[in-house]
Length: 387
Image (tube, rainbow, N blue to C red; front, side, top):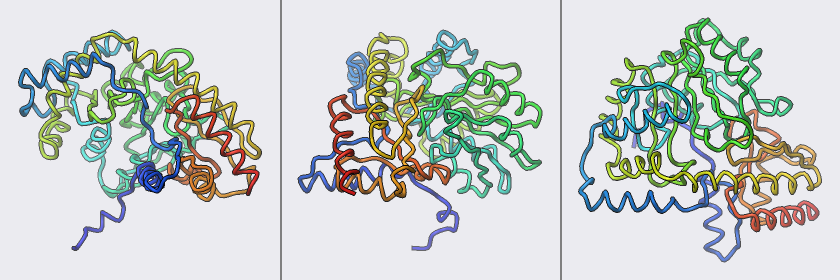
C-alpha cells in the first residue's frame, strides 16, 4: 500500500508501546508494576457512571451536534466561570472525544506549511508530531531542571522569528510535573501580543495541583481572543476511556474547529456528554480525593527515587509524573528504562520519548498504589546494584 510522505512525519506515544510490551511480559507470567501510562488508576466516580447508565436508558445514543450538546457546552461555560473566573459563552466551546483533537484541529486550522510553532521539550509528544505532520517547523523551548522544568521566558522570546505563528504551553506539565508561575504566564501573554501569536494552552492537569491555585494565560488582558484552551475529563475524573474533552476558543475559530469535527468524528458520544455534565455539576469529593492520594504517592516516589544511587528527582508541583535525572547511573535513558522493565519488572519511559531534551531522564507515572510504588523502588534499587 502506498503511503503519503506526510506519514513519515507522524510520531506516536511511546507509553502505549511500552504498555504493550509490559502486557506481553505479564502474559508470560511476569509481575509488572505499571508506571508508564499516564492514566489515573481510580475508577470513574459512581455518580458519573450512574448518569451514563441513566442517559443510555433515556435514549442518548444518537448523533448530536458536531460542536457538542448545547446543554453540555452551557455546563462547561458555567464551570469555567465558577472555577477559574473565565468568561466563555457556549458558542466559544467545542466538545471533542478527548483533548487530543483540539491540539490536532487547532494546528490544522491555524498553521500553514512553513510556519513555526514553539512547543515545550521535553513535552507531550503529540505537539511535535502534529506540527511536523502538517509541514510546519517544530521549534523546541527547552524545559530545564534548574528552573523546576518551567519555560525560560527569556529564551522563549529569543526563539520567535517572523515565521512564528503559535506557542504551545502546558501547565501543570507532562512529563515533568512542572508548573508555570503567574509571572511566566504574564511574560508569555506579553510576547504573544507583541508578535501577534496564537497560544495553545494545554490545561488538562489544571485540577491536579499540589500548591497554590491554577492560573491560565487566558486571564490576562487581550489573551482570550488569541488563545485556545484545552481541558477535559480524563485526568480529573478518571475518565480516560470515555474520550471526552473540550476546547475554549475565540468565537470566530469555533465554527472551523467544529467543521473539522464534522469531517472526522461527526460528533462526540452523546451519553458520555451527559455523564460529563454530572461530572462538572455533581459532587467533587472523589476528584479532590484523587489529588490528595496523588500527593501522598508523589512524596513516596520522590523520596524513593532520591534514595537510589545515581538518580536525583525534583518534587513536581502538579500532574502525576516524576522526571528523575539518571545521568549519575552512567546509563542511557532508553537502556535504563528497558533494563528496569526486563530486570526489575517496573515499566517506565525514557525521557527522550518526550523529545530530544529528555535525554538523561526517565518518566514515571505515580498513578499506582503506595505499596506498588515502594515495591518498584525496592526492585529498582536491587537492579541498579546488579548492573
